[in-house]
Length: 393
Image 1: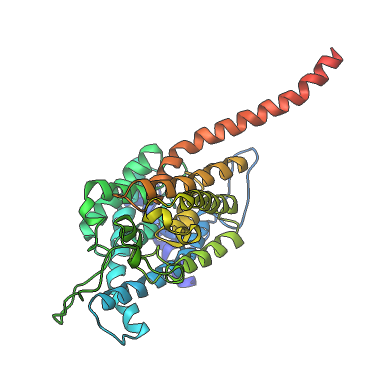
Image 2 (image 1 turned 60 degrees about the vertical axis):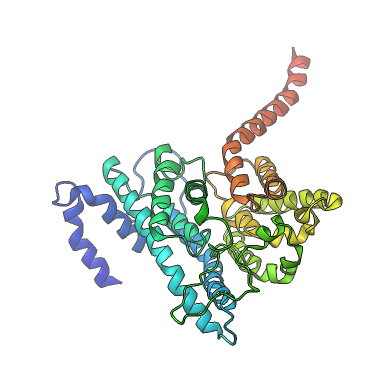
């Protein structure tokens, strides 16, 4: 690493004040601090939190927790492709390679469009690059259908960075999850590319095969919303993730591995994760008692492993910026996300997933939840002080 450090030291004067490339300093600084821990310290007076892990390292750990979902998603994309074409005896590696070829362009476009936008805003505002997109750049491809056009993905990513984050002041100031903002933009701007039976499975082939008659490209929740109870996969298949869906959200096992990494490192909130599952389970139990339609008849545990519920609970709802900040507020926030996600699934057949809208709605409500939690805490403490004050008076 020493030769690389020396190279950066030689280039650095060109990007500092007075250098030929001064206006591109934010881009250079982002690249340098990504590779090496910054060698500068705070000079201002006051209290500061000092830790060996800065925001970039935190974001990298979150990306690491997403790797199991990414790897499984690549394999599942290839698996679903070959199942759709009726091609049997496909090796694990062949499925994975096919999926990787399809998924990697999504990741490259997401990071390319998002980081370019970040660089432009950093140069205009003359501040350092925000590190938050390290995570958003990975999340966005994982919550997309595999056949989403790359140009649409680029537009959605740019929209998410500008409208979902930069207009609020950048990383740490946004009120909405940027990755879900990108998905919401595509869902409402290009609904045919984000729903239906054809967008979840890549059926392209150079060998002339056609999709087998018995195969449906609909997600399990799409089949359930249409009343096809016999097409809903088993709870074990759903838990493993061998079902159609977005790139990285089908496998609950992969999501739980990521949850373990987030919890072990102290980055993810167990309060939010647990309360999302609790809220979803309770709502599913209530609906299951009535069982008026196919979605209501799905068992509560099955609901928790279908679609993007687990992925949303672990990676989206726990966004430390757009989620509730108080401990009590986290319980309320997560519980309502789980409850609303199942509610939207059951009562909106046109949108059987529900997790995206539930999280975005609660992102908006999170500050209000925290406000009332803090107010209740203040009131409780004042009630403790008042009797003592009256006695002394």
